[in-house]
Length: 217
Figure 1 (cartoon, rainbow, N blue to C red):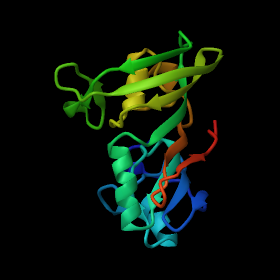
Figure 2: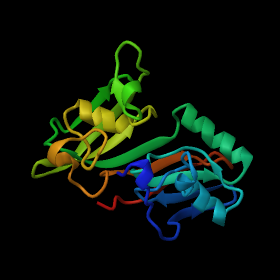
Figure 3: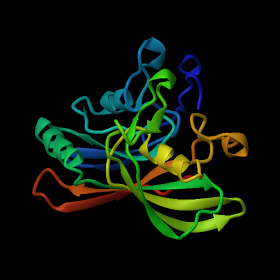
Figure 4: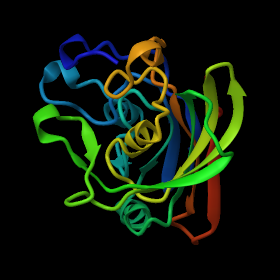
């Protein structure tokens, strides 16, 4: 993760996972903003790249800049409304893969800790039981590797930095997280967090569809 003044997004062609008349699904690379930031130096983003190839594409949701993986875009206003409601009502099912510091125990669990922005330290978020918004994440250990753990994360809410703060709260920060990790957990070439799978109802007909992209780490 770099400072905004040193934003150097990766190049390369769009990694298109799916396209039809209503939506398209893209595998976002780590290090690329989902939407433009403030200032011309932060104009390059996945949305602008998608719209260069698909001018009608509309934003539905976002991933953090340093998170990779599955993102869906709408190709019609109807699809944008339909998909947006699914995210708003928590009907879209998101699954992430992460590598975290330490050996997580037990094999499965749930983090249920409210989150709010840490104003003096923006964009950091923090746990706050008094004023935080509800946030819940299920997790399942995939395997241990030395002093690290590969884990699958299933967020039940969509708070900013939710997975990163929840893992930190468990004492297992995500590897390569320059905002929340410290010590050797920071010494990785990227944030080890990837949106592996997205399940939702197709805006045309309502059938359940699933889109996947394997983690590159």
